[in-house]
Amino acid sequence: MAWVYLFIAGLLEVAWAIGLKYTDGFRRPVASVVTVVLMIGSFYVLSLAIRTLPIGTGYAVWTGIGALGTAILGIVLFHEPVTLPRVACLVALIGSIVGLKFTSGH
Image 1 (spheres, rainbow, N blue to C red):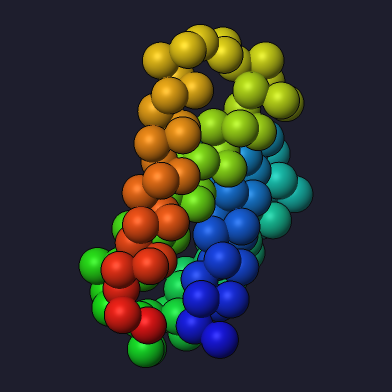
Image 2 (image 1 turned 180 degrees about the vertical axis):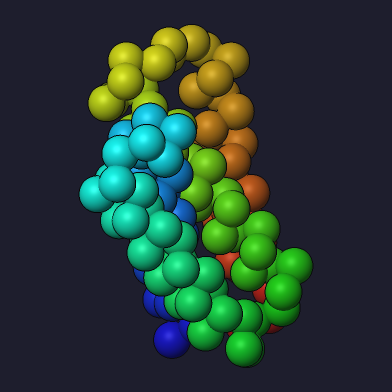
């Protein structure tokens, strides 16, 4: 169940990271409140995951999911550049996340 919690926490991290863009520097109240709620939810679900997962693995995978998802949505939503080096780094990030999952011992 810890890995499910960690995946959900990572998805919530993606949501709040994208939400930051919509807060316009926390000048938009509704977007700001939604983003802060997503942050709290992400941290809470992460805390459930690391009750049993090693903190190093849990935190690294959480940030990896967040970074990967945010980068992909940045490309899709905000037309950020898609370059070969950027894609290669995202593929390496996927490899790192999968590697941590399979070497964590949980």
